[in-house]
Length: 636
Ligand code: MSP
Image 1: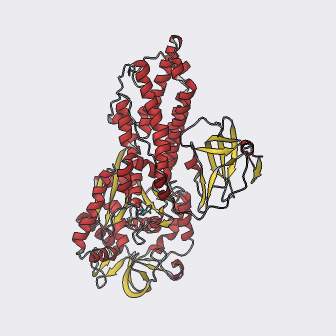
Image 2: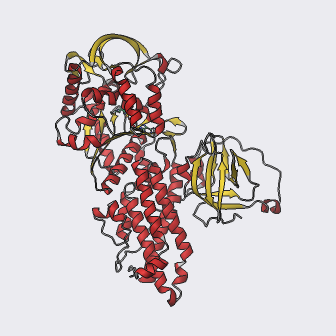
C-alpha cells in the first residue's frame, strides 16, 4: 500500500524554528512508521516562496527576492538531515514545474467557469496577505499581527468557492476523520455554518510582481495560497506523473492550527473544482508556546531547535517533542521540561533497563545469550509475550490515529512492566544458586526479547538509539528488522549471540540549582509559612509513590482528570489538573499521593487520595520522583 505524507511548505521570510521542526519531525516519524509497515512511502516538504511577505523580508536584507529565497530555502533544506528527517522530495514554489502546474490548474478552473473577474473593496492585512471580514477581526485588528488592516479597492479574479460549500459540508460529515482530531473538524464545520464567500485569487502586478502570472491575464499574479496549496500535487507530477497516480489517493497532510482554514476549506474546494479527488486526512496539531506567548516570527520569541539538539542529543530532542505534545493541543516548550523527560523516561526508565539487562547478561553468561528450552521460557519467561502483543496493537492504533504521544506512552508502559519484572524476578538472587540457573536463563532471555521489541518500536522517533540498542543486542540492524510483521513475531535475541559490553544510552543531566532557577520563570514572593509542627504531626500524613495506570477526562468537568493509580494497590484519584496535563502525558508517570486522606466524592467519583503539586500561579505542577521507585513506597 502506498502512503503519502506532507508538511506545510514553509515561508522563507524567516529562518526555521522549533514549530517547523516539530511538524517536520512528526512527518518523519510517520514516514518511518509506515515504512515499518512495509508500505511504499513518499514524504514531501519544501518552501513557499512567493508573495509580498517574502518580498518585504528580502527588501529588509537589501536583496532581490531571488537570491533571498534561495538562501533561506537552503537553510530549511539543510536543517532536515541534521534532525534525521529524510524527505523524499523538497519542493519550492519557484520551481518551474510547480509554476507550470499552477498555471494549468488555474486555466482549467477558469475554463470551467469557476473563476470570475470583479471589483472588490475589503480590509486587507499585508502580514497575512489576505482580506479579512469585520467579523474575523479582533477589536478591529488582525488577530495574528495585531495591526489594523487597510481598506483596499481593486479589481481581481475570484474563485467561486461558495459553490462548493454544500459539497464540503457533506464530505466532512460522511468522512468523520477527514479532518482530525475532532476539535478541528468541528471548527471547520462551525465555520461552514456561515455562508462561504468566494476567494480572491489574484494580486495586481502594480502591487506585487513576485508571483506566478495568471495564464488568462498578464496584469496579475496568483494569490500565494492558491499557488502554495498546489505544491501537494505538483510535487507528484500532476496530472500525468506516475507518482501522482500512486500516491495521491493516499495523501495525508500535517499542519498546525494556524493554517486550518486554507487546508480544511480552500484546498478541498480547489481540488473539487479542478476535478482532483480530495486528500484522505488533514492532521492538525496545536502550537508550541514558549514562555506563555505564541511563538512566531512576528513576535520574535524563538527557540533555536538545533541548540537543544546539540545540547541534549537529537534523539532526546525528537522524543521530547513527540512525547510532550498531545497531538492537537498546545504545549509549552521549556528546556527544564526537556531535561525532566530525558532524565525520567530516557536515562532512567529505558537507559537503566537496557544497561542493567545487558550488564547482567555479561555478568552471568559472559555476554552470550543463553539457550532456553521452550518449556522453561513458558514457565519463567515473565509472561511478557501477551503484554508485548497488546503493546504493538495499541502502538499501531495510536499511530494510525496520529496520537503519537500515546504511541510512546504505550511503549513506556511496556518498559515500566519490564522494569518491574526485573525487580520481581530478582535475577541476582537466581544467580546465587545452581538450582535456579535454568530459571535465570529464561528470565534473561525474556528480558532481552523485550529490549529487542522496544528497540523496534522506538525506531520512528529515535532511529539512532534504536540502531545502538540493536548493535548492543548483537542484532543486525538490517532494514527488515524494523518491519512490524517481524516485531509481532516476538522473536528472541538468538541464543549464542555475543553482546558487546553495555553502554549508557542516555546520560543523566545533572541540573545545578542555578540552572534549575533559570529554567523556571521568576516567582512572586513565597506565601507566609504555616505554624510549626512536630515530627509526629508530619508522621500522621501517609505519603506514597504511585504509578499512573490510566488517565481520562471527567465528562462535564473542565478541570478534572480521573486517574487510576498503582500504589501497591489500585486506587482512583480525581485531580484538578485537566487544564494543565493531558491524560496521555501522565500514563506511566510516578506521582506522590497523600494516601490516608479521607476519600471524597467529586462529580460522583470517589477520590481515594490527593496528588502533591506545587501551587504555581500558572497552574499546578505535579511532583514526581527523580527515579522510578516501587509503587507504594512510603515517603520519609
Ligand atoms: N507557507 C504557509 C504554508 C503553506 S502550505 C501549502 C505557512 N508557512 S509557515 O512558515 O508560517 O509555517 C506554518 C507552519 O509551521 C504551521 O502550520 C506549523 O506546521 C509550523 N509551525 C510554525 N510555528 C509553530 C508553532 N509555534 N508550533 C507548532 N507548529 C508551528 O503557513
